[in-house]
Length: 75
Image (cartoon, rainbow, N blue to C red; front, side):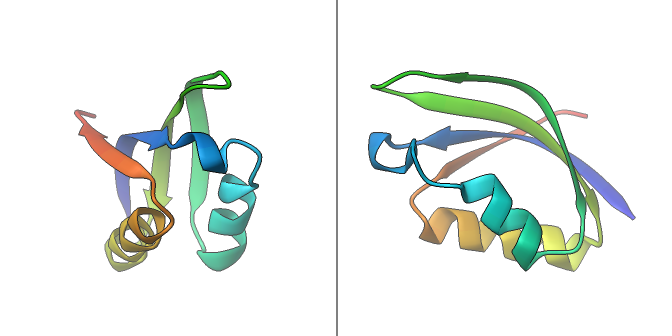
């Protein structure tokens, strides 16, 4: 199992979309929301993902395809 903390930076057009719900339905890992800040202009969320390395990497690709910026954080 691997654990990776990341900051997800959301563009304004995704603020009303259930991105985390879709992420959890698509992949079999655990997500812990560490902190978040969402306004009408910007939004970010720090999460810790725990699961298989291949699934985590695949989820990063999917998130980027949705238009979300991923910033890796040190664990």
